[in-house]
Length: 586
Image (tube, rainbow, N blue to C red; front, side, top):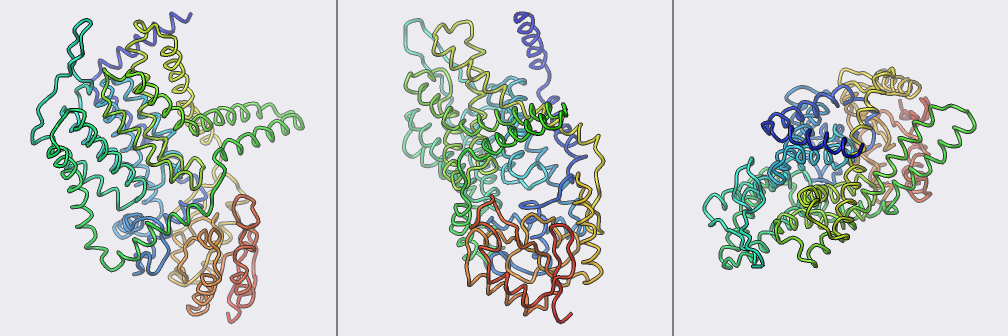
């Protein structure tokens, strides 16, 4: 039976590899865009998504990031969605659909990158599926979030790898080698020409564009690429001038884009550096979590599922337990992937087992992932680990390709063990692909509950929660006008500013910074803003917070602000976890 399955798999792989490589790529692009499209607004739009949709209103209303409102990311994070609002009108759905399109393009260019690296269509498909359904686009707030910086990094990587091996996208990156029995292997080098430096310059341009959306993730990519250029030139015994010229070509592309872009942000550049470079680190590390926090959460869910199964006898819980168990395996494996890949790379280097492969290619993805890893330790959940583990997926597939190429020749027990482990790892990491489609199909069978305004529509799975938000929005519309000042405190609220076109009177569209880094001064500033700008109402829930920790609860972290709300506003309505306070003079 195993032989039949193996024969079928080999036949399928051969057929896929014979297809024009653009056909699977375009098919993936359509799948990546069309499949998530029916579910792009199946969300309460809380947390990072809410901040992503609310913040651009500040730009439209004439505010500046870092000066008039809090932002821990580079300015592209707010100016791009603000541009979409200005072109198409204030509607959150335009921004969400645009983000789905960006995620689909990421999947397409991941396939192109995989084709360049692995030559074979089927491995390019696997690498694209791995990252799209189990990498940064999936784990960091989902496919409807802005991942444009990652698209730019993928395109930059394509140009860099083409420069590294001086070939076109549909040609193998495996170097031609000349083997003589019992003699040293000679690598046939291609002379460096002007195209090499041009490709590095183009890689730098897209790296520069990525800096406008994410700083530390892009900086990790930049350092990885520069280090690999240096090591590659050194391994080929090129002159120091060639090495320096190569690095300068890449860096000049990056600096050119940053220089031009800085002209548009000259008024905020100093405060931007303070917030993006220093403030974001302090903010991120203030909400630290245990490294395997996602695994522990899933274990607890599984135990709870078993309790429900035994108490209710509902056998549908078996499917839920199975889903959570597969998710647990996947998340736990992804968490230890940096350590597994590091061990394999070191083992291969120590044993000089990479002599027939491109070491520079391996170093590039390895350094990219490892340089991103320290920031992930600031808050070690999957969304923050994703920038680190995503590049490492390419190394898993890279070594997996070695397994298929050498399966019949390699008799070394340790080699076979490592490569079979890689095969198992790949299957587990691919588990979110069928789970995603199964979950999507299940969502189609459930009735969504609409939360709709003139400025966008969200679909909730929970009817009471949808009713609460709809009633809340009706109350907001009845007791205030568009452009009036309202204030929303809970991090877990939908994008109420964007959905109602109301203005925030304070510096903070997200209260997470006041919770993670409590400050009497910040609370007094928020209170003064609420009073000085004649805030009409406050949407509040005193008991909200993070991780069930006392020190991360609103009442504990912001007592001054809580007192300000109670002294100057009256509680008028409660819509579930949304409590509405109106100004006492109203």
